[in-house]
Image (cartoon, rainbow, N blue to C red; front, side, top):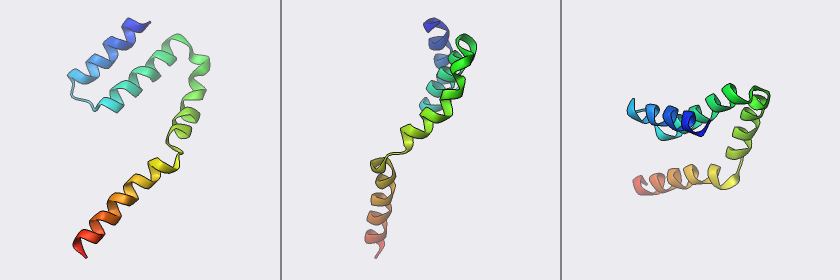
Length: 71
């Protein structure tokens, strides 16, 4: 199983797919091939991973800096 995931991820890198998409696609493919019952957890875990205040605040700090630079 780990070899399949590694090969899938490296193929994604070889086709110049972004790192996040290659790793995420490899993980989803691994879950779909080897444990399809847990595939329902993927959207839940993806949402809880990005549902954090600091991750939302970083783009707003960048926007505020750009606005102050032009103002």
